[in-house]
Image (cartoon, rainbow, N blue to C red):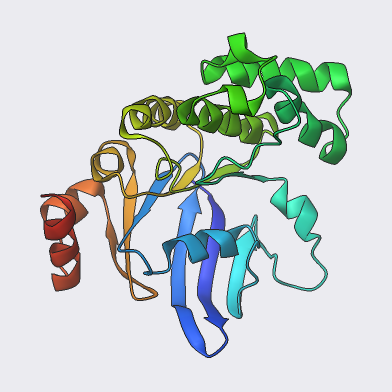
Length: 244
């Protein structure tokens, strides 16, 4: 399988504080990679560097064979290839559900409104939200809003879906509905890079798990390796705390 994204020697400083240190890893086409680790370990910063919401301080991000951190690259065109789902949904409150999923397609991908609506309806159906197309975000539960946010990202038909703690802002009873949709997407062969604190989900759905600690990748491997036979003390300590 080809690598869609290759990250090489990536670093990120905020002022004098080094948040990411010499990060190397890749995501293959069709692979589901979960990034786990304590708060402050650099997980979300890494994800935000991948789609250039944060500009890395050093290193390379190779996408389809080219370093997108080169000045000549159109980062907006690159960003359209990455779907991003945030903790806090980031929906447009003044638009209804259908319009939330249409506006980016029309503006960025230059699709016609009719085509964009057809694509939006398709993905709203995938996440089980097609009957809510006329609702405004404030009329929906948190779980429903997050499912719309997933449909919106999918409507751009990206190469990779990025999820930044997609269930952390949800009430416990709503977490399951979002994880179920993500599990179905993983099974459909979608390439996914997921920052999550849901260990059961990471163990069940991932092809590969990356454990971050203090800005470095401390360990990575299959779910079996990471959850059953971690080699690093800090991985073991983290799992002992979180799997109680």
